[in-house]
Image 1: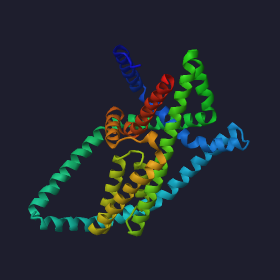
Image 2: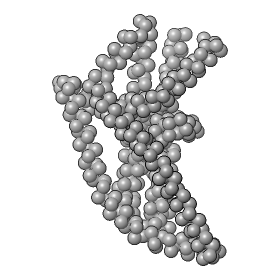
Image 3: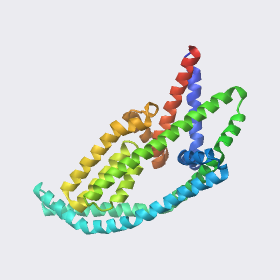
Image 4: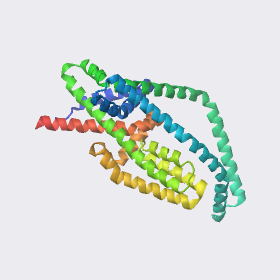
Length: 338
C-alpha cells in the first residue's frame, strides 16, 4: 500500500523538526553517533571474551584499555618520522621552487611576472593570517566543543560496550507494546549496517594505506608513514578523501623528489584506488552498503554544509543506514503482502 500524500508530508515535517532539534544539540548528537561508531569496533572483541566466560566488566576494561594502549603506541610511532620528514621537506622546498621557476620560464613567464605573482601570494597569505588571528577567539569555542564531544564519545562507547543492549532494551520498553518489535528490528539493522560500514572502511583504509605507504617508502618520499595514515583516515571520507590524500602525497613527492617520482606516486595511488573500488570494497561492504558515487558526493556535500567536516565524515554511514532501513522496510512489505 502506498503512503498517502498527507502522511508523506507529515513524515517530512517530522524529519525536518528532528534535524532542527539535533542541530541545537549538535555536539551531543555527534558524540552519540561517534560513540556508536567506536562501539562497533570495540564490541566484537568484547563479545569474544564474554563467549569464553569473562564478565561484562573485565571484558570491557580489557578491550578499552587495549584500544587506548594501541592508540598511544601508534602516536608514539608516528611522531618521530613526521618530525624528521618535515625537516627533510624544508630542505627540499628551495629545490622545488627552482624547478617551478625553470618550468615557468619555459612556459614564457618572465622574472618580473613571477615576482609579481609571488608578491600577490605573500599578500594573500598575510590577509589570511590576519583573518585567522581575528577568528582565534571564536575558534577556541569550537576547540572546546571538539574536546568535550570527543571525551563524551569515548565515555559513551565504554558504556555501550558494557551495557548497550540493556540500554536499548530499556528504551524499547518505553515505546508502545505494538511498536517494540519494529524498534528492536530497526535497532538491529542500524547497528549491523554501521558496524559493517566502520569495520569495512577500516579494513579498506588499512589496505590502501599499507600499499601506498610501502610505495612511498620504496621511493624515498619523506613522511611516508604520516601520508599512509592520512590515506587510512581518508577512507572514512569516500571518493573525496582518497583524492585529497593522493594529491597531498603527490605534492610531497614532487617537493622532495621531483616530477618523475610524483608521477609514479600518482600512478600507484590510482592503481590502488582502482583495485580497492572494483575488487576489495565490493567484497567487504556487500550489496547492502553499495551506494552510487553521485549519491555519496551529494551526501558528503550536504553533511559538510550542515555540520562541517564532522558532517562530511558522518554523511556516508548515515546515508548507508537510511538506504538499509528503506530496503528493510521494502522487504517487510513484500513478506507481509505475500
